[in-house]
Image 1 (cartoon, one colour):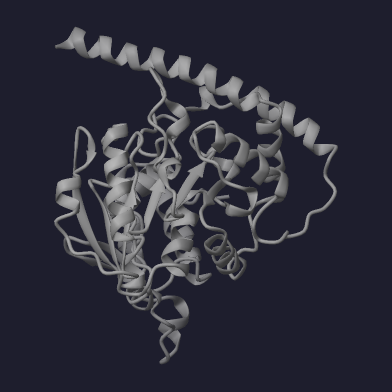
Image 2 (cartoon, rainbow, N blue to C red):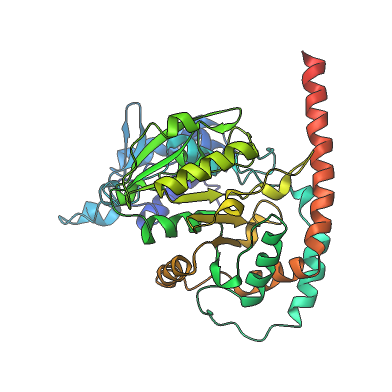
Length: 392
């Protein structure tokens, strides 16, 4: 049998993706370099395959942009064009991520790179033994696989309530909502609590600048500078705050991406002022348990006497991101409202993941794991500082 040239095989594979609707009209195909890496060929082979598809009317190059799908075999045979999904998605409510963020997302799955962008533990620091032990125990406790009531497993919420008490936050399980990570908590707040057209104040720089979280709800974003003490309070309180139309999103402990931690005195000043202004606060505190030299000051939620702080935490950074278990703590009425909104989308986080995290917390394996992680993080931090001094 005659061997099919590689360029012809590549052209056929691309043609199949187009014909099956996997790559629709308007889609930008991977770059020549990406295709060459995927098929482990020279770029000249990829260029030959693309030229064939261009001659068939399936692809078209746009200078400075890339190569796009312009037709499929059905559109070439019919006078009726299929829907232009690219045009439709361009005007969708949720905008696309920035190109840099998309590139980072694509690179995050590569095993040959050290992942720094996600702010998570490396594979060598995941609690493999603790998770295995907890899974064995949990497997004997499985009784139901339903959706639950939307708030999350009662036992897990009780364990999180106990854990938060060690940070000075006294909050009942009824005031805790289990979510599939901190991002879902923020999405629920943006759609279920904040008004359309509201003003959200947040740190500059901030992680949220990269994901356009509040843009679909047409909210105004007001960046506030960050210095070595965290959020610049003088700059924040120069603004006018409209009641029921303003909120502050803040990451005061091990801030992403600067790493700064707001001192206790500044936290007290911030909360006193926010209480006077009746300014709602969204506190993102997902890195708290990963301190190295000494514990950080208590959360803003620990200073909250009026129930104006919505407190977000997650086990993605301390146990494993794949579990997708986090929480949101706040006034019971707010938690019930967000639970209702959540039930309109996915009915709740993974039941097995909830039981697993509950067991890790209840067995005190979590505290033992954190002690080991902090020790290893300190070693890695000190080694990087040594290398920096050595090279300088």
